[in-house]
Length: 111
Image (cartoon, rainbow, N blue to C red; front, side, top):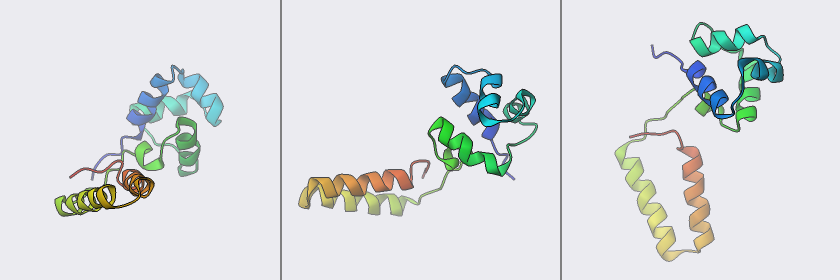
């Protein structure tokens, strides 16, 4: 079973904001020890804190959990051709909106 890397993600995001563990703990309402345990991989945040953390860091819960969806090469080609067709033969704003929808849906994807 693949290990959840939420602690690594929290650590990285906290460092990007130049925050201490204590500052993050105070904001979320947990102990500094809890943040330390999460970041070291010794425990995980309670599931009810995931939306709080995601909102605070302005990320998705998928990103927080380092969840990635595998997209088939066929699906990537399908999306490419659809977007290409929209940009070539459709309203530009429609094409941009559709492309952005795919980027949101598959932002953490790989193939």
